[in-house]
Length: 148
Image (spheres, rainbow, N blue to C red):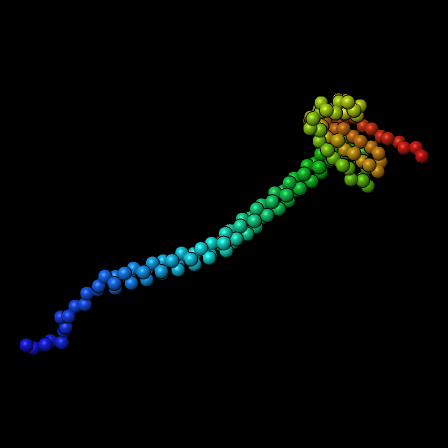
């Protein structure tokens, strides 16, 4: 018989060899799951940091927008009042809006106040102005003269 260089011998795996292969594949899977478990806290921390940065940015953006709009409103309402009465120029007023006029009717200054009226308080001059922007009228004006 002539040999063509090819071997016809086959090797068959025994039951022990098959168990070794399955044990090796299980240990590889265990190593992968262990490494994922080790990374999980770091991934969670990263997600929390990114969320914190996002919400911090949104907070600052909202705060800036709110401050800008309230400053613009105060300037607009002050210029509207300045067309009616001469306002003190060297003093910045404290400006407030009446939200619940019913609770203020016990005070004589607010006797005719309605919701939406604007109060200008000039502390240096001891002056207060109650202004109704809807009809562009001064509702009440008060000066307190202190005697020493």
